[in-house]
Length: 254
Image (cartoon, rainbow, N blue to C red):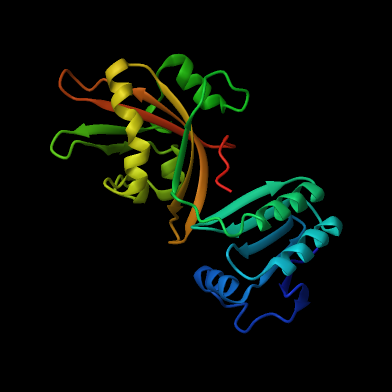
C-alpha cells in the first residue's frame, strides 16, 4: 500500500494546500494552526492523524475520528500544544475516543513544559535497565550520563554522556547539547532531585514528560522514566549518575 495523504478542512476532504509537498515541519505546523487543517496519512505502517490544538478544526477532528474506523492500524495521534505530542493506539475506537477527549481539551493552555512525578519502585512498567539500576544502585558508563555539582554556579553540570544513553541517541555525545545546558526551566526542574541523591546515597526513580527541542529544531513532548544514582567522585566532589529510558509514564498533561 502506497502512502496516501488526505487533507481535511471544515469536516470534509479537500485538495492539498499550496506547497504541501515541499513544506518544512515548521511551515506545516503553522498551516495546521492558522487554517484548521487536519492531516491524515495512511500507509502499510498504519494511520497518522496530525493537527494543532487551539485551531478551528473540531468538525475535521470528528471526521478523522470516524475515518479511523475503516483505516489501517496502529493509529498515531500527533497534535501540537506547546510542542508535538505523539500517541500510539492499537484499536481505532480507542484512538477515536482519545480524539474526542482532546477536542474538549483544546482550550487548555499547558502551564509548564516539564512534568515530573516520583513513583514507587517495583512497578511492572519499569524498563529492565532501570530495574537493574535500582537494584544495584549503580549503572554502567555506556548507558548513563554523569552530572557533577559545580560550586561556582551551585548547579549540576553534565560532565559525561554515555554512548548508549538516551541523550546520546537523540542529541549526540556532546555534553552541551540542549538537554545538558544549565539554567533553563527543564534543567532546573529535572535537577531538583539530585541534592537528595547525593546527600542520602539512595537512588531516585521518577517519570518525566517534557517539551524539548529536538535535534531538528522543533519542540516535541518526550515521555521517559529516570533513575538518578549517587556518584562517588572523591571526598569533596558531589555528583549523580542518571539512567533514562523512553517509556510510558503515569503523567497526562492533556
